[in-house]
Image 1 (cartoon, rainbow, N blue to C red):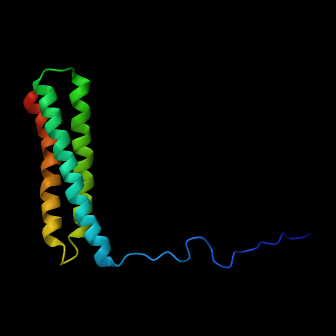
Image 2 (image 1 turned 45 degrees about the vertical axis):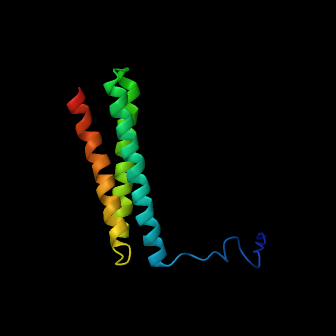
Image 3 (image 1 turned 180 degrees about the vertical axis):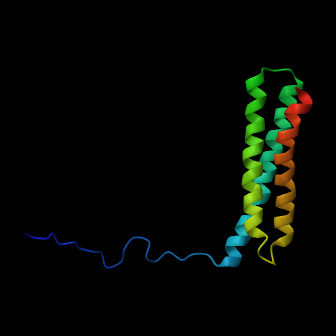
Length: 113
């Protein structure tokens, strides 16, 4: 039984990829948490405006779901970023903004409905 030859490239794809340091990785997550929280708050505000204008139910519910998803994503990114000492302020801002988007998306439908 013959075996097939497997030829490997001398430089496999991705062999020269340089991964970021831990500090850079956590700094990116701190920025990501702030951005996700801001998008979540924006979606929450738009959802509140649409609900206040009295538009149909599915329209404003989509914005609450977006606020919930971006709030959770921001909280997760902030949790990773909080492990770094240098980016703690940005991570706390991201955690606060994302937490506000998350809690607002849970509370707002009960207040409006």
